[in-house]
Image (cartoon, rainbow, N blue to C red; front, side, top):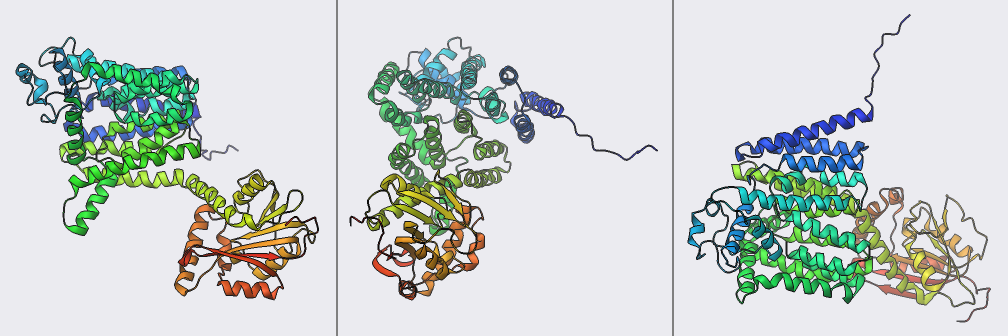
Length: 626
């Protein structure tokens, strides 16, 4: 008898891989035609999303050799090379600045409206210029690229545009090839096959393409310890797009003065051809105008602006731009100090700083996101929040055709925030917990008994174990961790406890710590009694205390919230036992168990008050040198 029941036949991963690859190729090929006309903006967005889905599965399934990844990286860019500047007017400013230089002028001297070369105003380029009353803010290396691209300019043609685009695409492809020397083929694909990246580099030719090459060289040369050359290319990056200059302190911290002076020399040499008394004043004026009047796809700026308008009824646009810029500049020293403390990699420091810059700026065009996308790939991390924002940012082009612009701004930045929290919250929380452990240690170390030889310490209810780690490193103690949940993130020995008596003999430890533990215990009195039984010296109890019912409610809410975040639900079972006490109630409990309270300390104010109690159980058997 033949079984005719149907069976689900799964396609092999190689078939899915090439189906997704074909889908990506078709999407890129279609974009080469659709993106040429703003009238097809909605279709362009649909193709970008479709291509992004195919790109994601190409990366997810994997299996592409590096040669294949690089080959298609080139082909995808060649497919979009023919696109005109349909999504951005920046290219016309590139050509204009190049033509001013061809005429012997300085692009930082006059705005296009006031330029003395009036014959240039008859060119098609002038008609399509954005911000004709603004003096150029493109730095010297960008100006050199513009000048090279306009060497064979023909009036009313796109020849100069394609020459400039060719230079920028070549630079970005070199960055991709250099990326292949730093990361695995999967992360090369993760960056280089991204349809948003392809559209904004090969499709629309933005100067960020050249910045990527310079930053790739900085990262690569830093890994090879060629710090002087790294500083040279960091200067080049800064003279393409100004804000990479703020990365110099990161390089200085890692390599010292020897990594900085070659870059400073190159910085000066590149600026000399354009040096003039009016340059700083004119460029600063234009930058200030951009910060005050230009706004596009800026999540935090729009949120604050809407909030202030709701509160006051006034438009705060002109004040908010400079204010956010000041916040960013004032925050830079904090980033530099944090880099020193956290020991970030150079690429990580650049990514975090760039992220802060983009969050606090008033204008975030889709091509601004090329740098964080490249840096995440160079770090071999996924950066899904930047991916999400970049795809949604492509929808902001619908503003040009009176489409639904705001929905993409809101969804883009809301998704960026949610995915960013998911991505970084665990690290932030652990960083907070490590810092918190240092503070905890400073409060209790004066109360450790001074004995001959290293103290034997039990951190009972240790959670992540960071406090025990500090005690071991600072005091040279022998530390054992114990808890009813497995949350240890240190190399210290960890004992998983079960309900009942503690599994150690009497008078086994010199010090037993109960730091924010007893209020979680199902039977706090029994746990305290057991801690005193196994301790031959001091039991140190630290607890949050309250004075009013309002403070108690605050402690209950805060304890649940914070412990859920830090433990990802592992501590939820302890919430039903929450029992905070006042300082007086803790003293009564210690007196009940005949504990000798020899010292007490308090810190914090109001609902953040913490009380510490030092209990002497029995005279320490080992020689005491107090």
